[in-house]
Amino acid sequence: MQKYLKLLVFAILFLTFNNNIFCQKVGFVSSETIRKNFAEAKAAEQRVQTIVDEWKRELAAMKKQIEDLEFEIKKNRLIWTDTERSGKEKELQELISKREKYAKEKFEPGGEYDLVVKEVMKPIEQKIYAAIQDVAAAEKYDIIWDQSTQPLTYVNFKYDITVKVLRRLGVDVSQLEKELDQKIKNDPRNQEQEEKPTDRTRRRSRTTQTTEPQKQEEGTVPPEEKEKIQRELERKQ
Image (tube, rainbow, N blue to C red; front, side):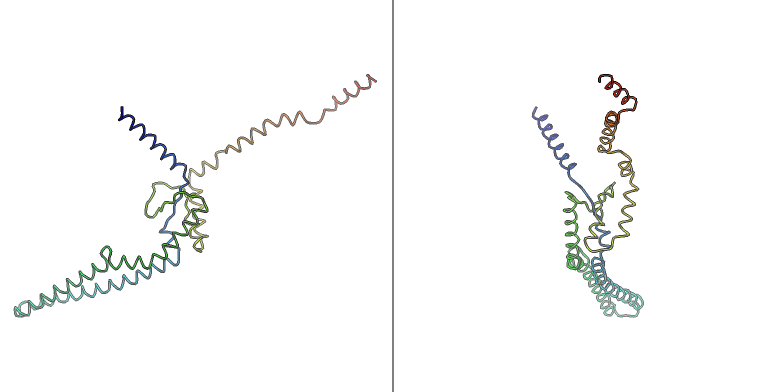
């Protein structure tokens, strides 16, 4: 009995939770599209890429040193003394270790790359987040998904606020707005809603139908009826 009672309570809570979700207004945004079209974000990403390119050049130079030393050891392995060969092999291992250490410092999780991205991109991300918050509040959304990090199987582009966020950030969105309007029009669900008459239209149609007979009744009296009434009045006089 207790088992069934627990299941019943769970079912009630589940339905209540789902009902609350369905009552909420949900929208979505593409942070990737925002970063691609937001000039400040593109400049910040370019700055990060410049730093990364410099690190990669350093690693490439170290790799060239290692390859040259390996070639030198192979070429002279028969003419070098044991001491000379041992010294070069030790130098080679030191170069390999140095390169590996450099790569880890720069690119391992929590390394310099993550720190640079956080330092450079954080102010940009804060601006984007603030713009999303402003649009969501103005449009009365309860939940905003990021389609770039949490792809959804299907989305109705009526609820895409990406263009509105970019406009809030001062970006010219005229072309993006046209593309969004086309996506909304091409969605079969939106086409169905346009073709389906609304309740207000139905009520208006019924009201029109019911008032037509009344209008006819309240119209002018036919001439024949007027003459009949006039004759009746003359006879009484």
